[in-house]
Image (cartoon, one colour):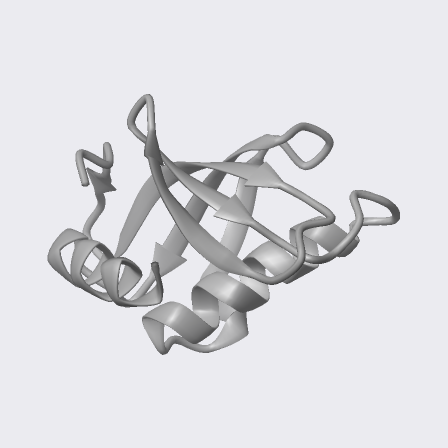
Length: 98
């Protein structure tokens, strides 16, 4: 995966492309440097955003409060920041969820 990750002192940032209303939650792969996800939640009332955070937290084995959407709350492309992980951990663990 050629996922573009920005490493910060205690966190990692990357973009996520979401496709809501899928049959199940899963990592589809990489698209233009972004992580591509399919989520079963609909894109209404923040349900897809919440599902995105929960899915990433579960895959990366971090607390839910460690996952934040910094930008793109109303679009399919989101900027996500995850605290307490390294870029290597993100790449390795997200490949397991694929």
